[in-house]
Amino acid sequence: MNLAYPLENDDKVIIDGVEYQLDMSFDNILRLFDLLEDRTINNVTKIEVGLRMLIDDTLDDYDIYQKADIFTEIFKQSIGVDNKKKQLVDLDGNPMPDISEDDKKAFDLAQDAEYIYASFMHTYQIDLFEMQGKLHWKKFKALLNGLSEDSIFSRVVGIRTAELPSGKGMQKERERLRKLKQKFALEEDDEDET
Image (cartoon, rainbow, N blue to C red; front, top):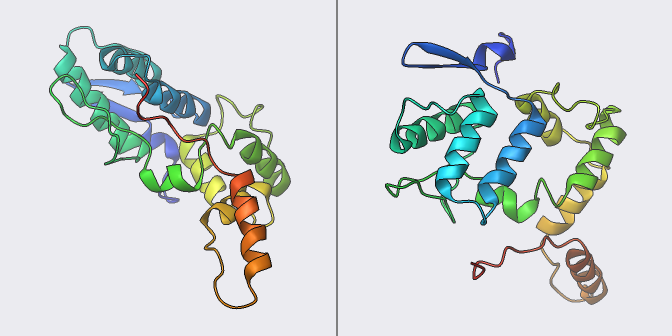
């Protein structure tokens, strides 16, 4: 994000001389993450639907390998999220975009949706449902990163990332934090599911 230029300057992509407008609304990008994480959908469909979501075109003149490269490049350049663990691959085995490993440990945009919603209302008086289709993904990320420390989302992430205290006399605090970590733990993906 560069405050010297409008965000819309980044919301276009040129593919073989044709300019496409990107849909960078935060709710569209969150749905794209859901699509990419859905194990019931094959990679070809993810590429086709992902392109439709981002540029409203499936690029029918391109083969699936070219589409996969285009989709991956658009995703990396526009959304800026890249994952090395549990990464989806296209038909050639090339990595496809996903959410970063660190973000998955501390929070999950889907599982923490209520906390995020409440925190945006608390900190900014922004109703995220009213902002669907309007709030840019990069603005959403910046606001999410800037949530006040007393927001529920920040407190939950703080609990998840806090180290258990050690040393003499810390048993009660250690047990209290352990219970909080258990209460606010993220549901883990079952990697053995197929």
